[in-house]
Image 1 (cartoon, one colour):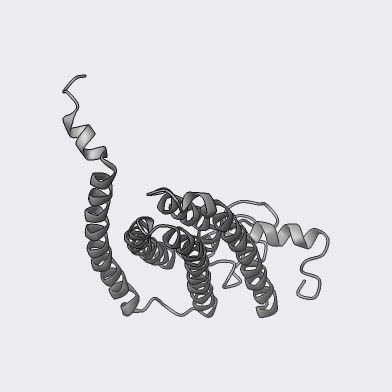
Image 2 (cartoon, rainbow, N blue to C red):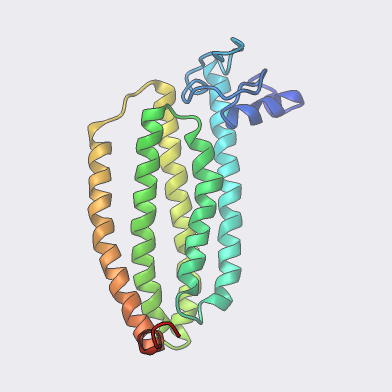
Length: 232
């Protein structure tokens, strides 16, 4: 299989394994089984018994993640040309890109991990994305009030931010899947990293909320909302 892994029916088998399913019965298999070469618990079919086969799976997973990432980068680059001239739109565009990265890059890779590693990896990436988004909102909305230069800067910045977020997620997950394949247990510092991300998130969130309040005041939205009659 390792010499013709992308040919014929084996391409379909690899697609099933990448989706966390047995290549014979197509049923879901426990996380970590593929990367460690364990058989399907239902039908007994071998997943990827040789290191060469597992390397092929890892390479195909990375290639697929890269292709999907650059789709998001190109879409954000095009859409931000229009969105960058208006408050909040670029931030919403960045949020949509992060959701795309989570659905197309993160979720498929997490299926290959054992439950404990999957949970820690998911929380780490979620908190990192939340910190990243909160900091980006602060920066983007400040740039909104710089005529011309601010809008053009937001186009370049938002495109680079999506690329950076996707590359970080891809490399982090590649590192975790490699550790999974080698049977390396979770480290204590990985849990400590979650605490650090959580504290950072609280700081950035407070700053983002304060900035959004200021932006709404500048736009006159708060005054009109608070001045509206109750029930009317």
